[in-house]
Length: 546
Image (cartoon, rainbow, N blue to C red; front, side, top):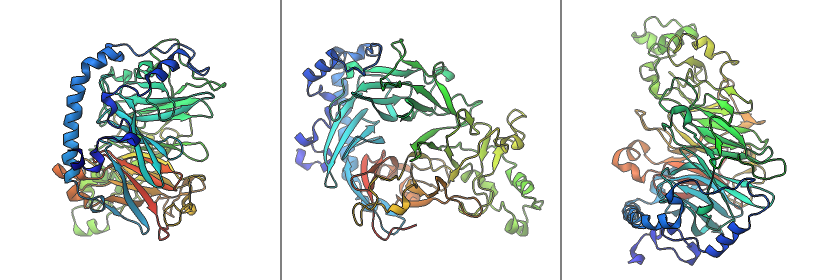
């Protein structure tokens, strides 16, 4: 029976141990018990018992096994039919630059989000559908092992959503993962199943500002080793909120100067509202984040939809000193900077790329937005990048267009992505990432410093956009701009015929990029798709150039 399944759904072999291990205990329970009895010197200063609730114990795990088993069986059957009916990858993605190739590495990662480097030839993948973290090992450019190292099924009511981070200390390493409500931690020995009984809470009450209500649920995690700070993002409750309390990045000091993990005396961890320090404010839904080679944190922000400026056509004309009094005449339409502004919400606001180098800086949401292309293309519209109030006169009579254009009030973005493209993850190409390592495979060294971003794709744009992996060229540490101060966005590959195949009941086979990591041993990129549960490798032949 197993031999009839697609390769991604074959039962695991010894080299793919525990890929379906939510039904199984850790392999080496004696070793786990030994670790609990003798914690390393760098373990937390307070005891970190498991969070409260009966689901923490093996007994409560046992009574949930029938439910878990039914869930996994149902998922297996759905995944079998989905994979069996899915066209080959080469029919579902299209390279958009000469020399770019996209090859399937593995599937079986439903709901894949963050992809995290876990040492030589190994990666961790968060899978939100199966509530697991899977470790992928590679050899000679192939995936040779998949093993579940963290099993969240049946343990906690709130699933893992996105964030995953490693915190290396002097004598040990900790693995952190986020749900919509909290950040949890485990001691982690590479490749081994984490001890779920030793789960501890790092940060609680993430949704406290909204009284526990959840809007956007991705919580990105970024650890800064040089300072010991953990940066945690929260996204807006609604399309547009009344304030920015649910739209910011907050940081917490979790490692001290001696390289030891520090947590408050409370067993519930740091309180997101009371203990955190706001690092960046007014970021509507910051999911894609990355450190550059200079140690600066950047983010790509998901902007709002349904723009509320019905007066934008006239306002833009006034701003640019254009005679736009008769917008309905064909002559005015041909000369106006706003020739198709009836549907301007399709291209505004842009998705912002921001440099987060100033503690407490405000980036606009919910009062201001960055205009996209109003009449010309994204590449050359002069209105792109200008700052505007979300509503005419401001939502409160204070945050109007003039207020938004004052950089002391509202820090404008460093670069822009097209509206509604939905950035999910990003990485900078750095020295030491394998540039030029393998001929016709590795990325060329002349693109080191550039930013790579996964775009999950639009959900409410008239013509779908995104569903791609793009490169933003950088120069001297900042996005490279043309004479109009506009950055370029270079699409490496995208979903094939996305306007037909990425909507409706055909979307299950649409490649929607999420997580991304650099495969340093090969100088290539690993990209995940949550909709298809796939990992692919993006390689660069000699024909690739910018």
